[in-house]
Length: 592
Image (cartoon, rainbow, N blue to C red; front, side):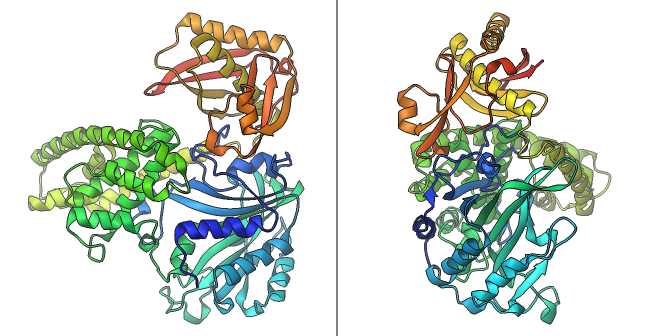
């Protein structure tokens, strides 16, 4: 197997598919635009949903990219050999063009010829079929024609071989997954019965080809899509580890420079008992660097809250390594330098990144000191030699104390912690969080209904009106649209007056009453900007973009759904404004 560096693997993948007619597209930012279902971009397909549903892409029907992704469900699992928050996904796409034969063949060629993975170590799985879709014999036949014997082809149900939708509704379909067999005994005790569905780690999934043939409806049925698509994903970190023979993604060149710096600062070794803490710091500082580079600042809401949480968790574990001074800003700068070739925005914003992390370190130090005082008060109320699980969880939830830190402080005083009680309280907390997350996902990733299309168009009018009333310093910082309302975040240093809000609302409704046509043109990003089109999400655009114009009132680069004329929108009503961070305001509005 070829022991490539991360940058070599990125380039090899892109070049392979460019040679097969794919246009390279840039990674979209981690913060989704016009997506009510997720806080972060969690998969390569998120920025491409309109095109998977049939909207033509400016660069054609064959695309390839390396997409930045962030998943927050398993933050507390980070610290083992494989769990990550931020990760990179290599992907190639067919938007109504080629299908199973080409996708599977190219996957096999890249794995065996470019990465030089021995074919005899490859295992694959296909969809077993159910009442919603048939057994995928076509993919299995293609694998057999490429030389994969039947005994290395497995069939599993939706739990393993079906991808999507990302939310409640949207594009989805059967997939075929590729695994590299690493050898060794099965740690789950299955031995001869062990297969790629086993969690023992002998079979490492490196690639997933999804055949998006269906759209899941709100009624739970699966309808054929208007076009059949291919959506593939190869995890960069996991593939690098396999190529180098590691069972630990933190040993790759993506992480080792950070780990080595932590070793030097702490005087401890990764090989010893401190590897979990080093993994957590390395993962979290990398994720935080990318999140801040995409415009998010620490706060107590949504993306800013996740950023604050991972930063403070990294700070806590740095302290547990014996590092009692500011270290994360320097580690973030190291991340920016290591990733700068692939993601230039990190180098462009590295000073801002380091500054924001340093500010958050100062805030956390104050919270930590308050937590330590609360810890002392808890001790004064103890009736025995044990801190209750409820009190330990209170320290965790309120002051950010991990169980390990509370236990360490307790041991110093000859006390113990009710860890089972802590886990019980923590589990209850997770269940409530998951329930909230399910509400967050309500509506589905592809919820491009008539109502959301109208509200999406209304954000263009709102954006333009805000700039007319407040000034050209205003620009969009994010949005969230459901079928009931829009939420629009923008840059502005102070609360809007009642007069300013009324004027913004009036301008939007004047544009609606004028019944302007909503026009779209394709052009280069440079031409769009030269014409005066707003384009504040520079990294997410390709060489060819769509520009939506509404008379002389609004002109923006955008990829979302729009109405044909503004008169279709109805009456625009601002419900609320609020602050969401330093220099950021939020407006909630509806169409009546």
